Length: 475
Ligand SMILES: *[C@@H]1O[C@H](CO)[C@@H](O)[C@H](O)[C@H]1NC(C)=O
Ligand SMILES: *[C@@H]1O[C@H](CO)[C@@H](O)[C@H](O)[C@H]1NC(C)=O
Ligand SMILES: *[C@@H]1O[C@H](CO)[C@@H](O)[C@H](O)[C@H]1NC(C)=O
Ligand SMILES: *[C@@H]1O[C@H](CO)[C@@H](O)[C@H](O)[C@H]1NC(C)=O
Ligand SMILES: *[C@@H]1O[C@H](CO)[C@@H](O)[C@H](O)[C@H]1NC(C)=O
Image (cartoon, rainbow, N blue to C red):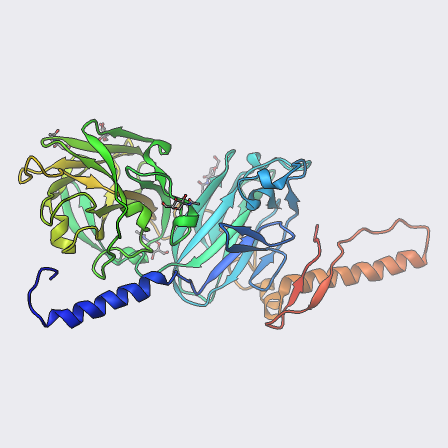
């Protein structure tokens, strides 16, 4: 189409170009955008403009069956922390849940931040717990001694969701430092992919209905891309920061400083940002391969998303290559120009892959017989690997539903509280009131010790008629 001489395509092209300009300048603004700083007493701003609200502010989310909040106390200067979200956490000695209201049904990104630290009372690295969305498991028997950010993509078709934190054993705790619940762009996961099954490639339908956990996100041949530079606040690691066995002696890294031509038919900027498509690992010798081998948890199914953008060829149709997964040829003589019609236009392919018993996943780009000596013989700009759910109980094992307390999944006692403007604040207010009465009673009898209960300050009504709580709540 780009080379067409037909004058009729001109107005059409102009329209496309102006559409492109108008849409590319607009940043993605999700309809659901819950950013919660757990255990914090004040909002935390990260990446310059993302404001995480404290979880004691119940305007956007409810915390049911709350646990104590703790903060890193022995740190002289909190500016030394990688992010303000690392300094506070909410700890749950008993099952607890956050409820989020959902404006727009469909795929959502759920990000859970875990930055274990020790406080006088808790050692977060010894926490052992499960995390569920409703009854669907995201993490089972989870524990971490290093900072991790877990990202999930789940379909939400209810007006609210519960994210449940459940200690795995009687003597263990659960914790979380920050939570993000964000509407995913509608084109983030499309419905059709290519299933690689015993060497054959079949059409896979219903991809958009599955749940995913991000396992790897790599900017091939390029530097780290930080949330600041990503349209969806993701991090893309360079190859040397990922545990991958790279076999690419005949490859080199290339970068491009020109404009990336996002097309309707290809990947959008939300699928991957410019910084990912502007760099690539390219193969400059014919009759060679470059390959990446990942070690994954076996017996799971994975979505492997390969990102391509021809930022190296001198002209269209001057690059052909083969794509192999676990040694199987899944795409022969792939011609990026044919699918995009332009250079520097992003494109991605979704493969659904089962790992073999050892959990090894091998991605190979190999030169094609069609390739000419002075051409580039293959490239890869980015790679994402997502774990998929194999059953409808979750991504990470089955968690006995008996562990979920009434009101966490089903609308039990919680319903009464939730029907109030702000259940949590109401509950605390009620307790404070009881405390006051008790205090008054004990004081009137003088000699008995005072009962020490949380102090709560209510700061008028918030916009939606709920109360906004601003004080420290230590329960
Ligand atoms: C964002 O990307 C630009 C261009 O690649 C780079 O110069 C800058 O350092 C990046 N900023 C952050 C915060 O990563
Ligand atoms: C490239 O890798 C594929 C899949 O493992 C293999 O079949 C092919 O022989 C390799 N080609 C070369 C030139 O090594
Ligand atoms: C799994 O794949 C790896 C690499 O492709 C291979 O070395 C290994 O033998 C395979 N294991 C099984 C059990 O097939
Ligand atoms: C994965 O979970 C979803 C529910 O979130 C379900 O609709 C889907 O069928 C599950 N996939 C498989 C393969 O069981
Ligand atoms: C968690 O670990 C316990 C003890 O090892 C095990 O019995 C249980 O099945 C595990 N639960 C899940 C959901 O993996």
